[in-house]
Image (cartoon, one colour):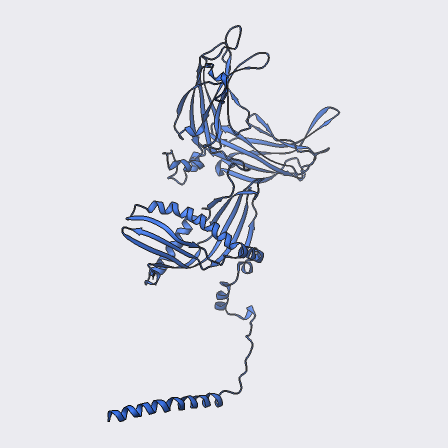
Length: 545
């Protein structure tokens, strides 16, 4: 009976399959619908779409469609596509150097022995720019707002050595949508004509990614995906949301760009001992000239101590520091002469990097003829000079030094800057940038005259132009904030006729400096008084220590 059942099963299987295939063929062939009308996909006008369809569509449209002030930049996307292999390598180097500093903070903690990159590449597909908008600014910079979307095939893998274990962590399927701001600053006369790129986010970015640990997708754990995504978005916004920036140096700060003041150097010339006697009758009449390297400003001078080889001055001076690492204080002593050149007594140099911010330091220095170690005149004893020095950073720059030193008032109160602005020594910076449509009765050779607290400064004269460009900066060290002071800025023109020099006013402005003190910085264009169409572009800053 069992044999008969197996035989029937085999016969049924062998006969049923061919019959089933044959019947299926005839059913498909002869019961196929005869009237099939294939139509092209229909397009609808945007006016007939409902609100929900419009919202879904707007999320997919590029920024240059939804925002008319954004420009379409297909050419830039093509450029990035061709340059991406090289940009990928350069970007990975920056990511590695930045990440290594962060990794170093965790090594030794939580039993972590090392964190290293196993693989790092941003993939073959570059970000796509959906629109660019250039922002107008009076500042010496170019501001670009970009709408970026990136869905690349990046491969980022880390190896973390934890105790005796080795964890492999991989970031996969990274997708980013962000509104970014790129600032190229400051402009310099050296290619590529800017020294720094500052990158920031204008809103919280949209980020999606997968995370695998030892090959397992931990983002599949219920609830973890949304939590990690939100934490990453908040951390990125905290670090780089405008006005926070991530800066990339393109050129060295000493190349092309004007160095910005970072603090005030307080110098006290105390006394000198056993100076050379350069006079035949009587003794030398010494005085000290002091200056900083890298500055074109005239040297500051002490008073002359008549007929004295051991003078005591106890005179205080304030100098502006722009580079703590490289600048040097130069001290030169001279014998004053009523007639003829003043006799040279000796010199000495003090590097500013020997100072600790906020700490007064005393130096007792031997005088030499020159800095040349092979100079035979250096063997001649020239006496000694004693000075006291103290470097005090500006309030805005004090954070640079707060990591190593306890700086007074670095900021627990949100109103601290407003309070400090009215206290103590500060620096008023006046930059004369340019003028427009200034016109005189005769030839226009414009220059600017600045009068502040009885002190007068002048820019260089630009010949035969109605739209001069100076970009010259003037510094005023003040003991207190100029809240009630006025500064007079006047555009003048001069010409020489038959040997006589004549000057003509082309317009002026009188500015109350209280706004500069309150705001810390002003960069504006002003209409000139007593000028038909004249405009002057000024930048004023107030820095406090």
